[in-house]
Image (cartoon, rainbow, N blue to C red; front, top):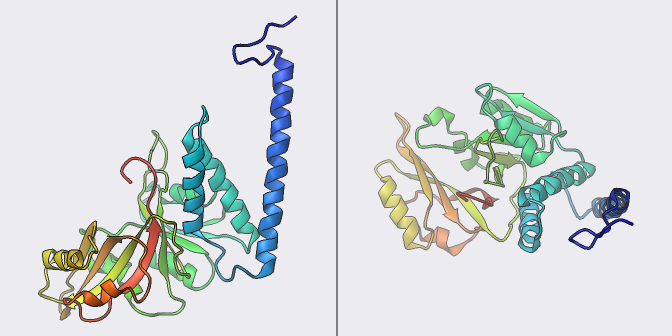
Length: 288
């Protein structure tokens, strides 16, 4: 007669494996039920346009991790649900990702697959412009682009054209990676995802503002002006192009700002109302 294990399960290996199989069947049944509900949602017309909701996906992951316990690593929960979300998103109209991978081995394609699914079609381009054209032309649902930086040249500042009201309007909708606790060998590229849709709020977000300023406005003055109206920027990138009489800035501010936010009208140092470049869910984990 087998002795009971310390966790009160019978020590018979076959019994334990049978229980795992039973649980797997239950999980699979629930996955199929979830897919049926997603299919009904898609058929109802509740979703139109790009089948992406990065904000809702982030909220789902935060909720699950808040209730998670036991020995299964939290990062495994994130990976399982990222693949599940990628699969159900693809059900609603297909999902293709364009990636700017200017340097071989830069890690942006790997970061895109981590976020949007390991088997999701990925179109790799050598320039940001090519990736954005894929989105504008409808050949890709979303583009993964390098983070803007203070050291980039004005010509590499892909966010500046987003200040214009071109159609289809492109917005930042996510930041990658969403799970910031990085194990050795995992994708480490920092990126933003853009799509021809408005971002959706997750409950804990940051908004990117595009601003046009007088050329003599300093980064310090702009940061102070944003803080004076309650928008305490985490980063401000300022570009002054040679031969251009105005400057352009990108500010990363807390919260999900909507068009018409009264704080935006209180910025006295801007030449026109700030453009909402997009928003993203605050990533989870170290350094978020």
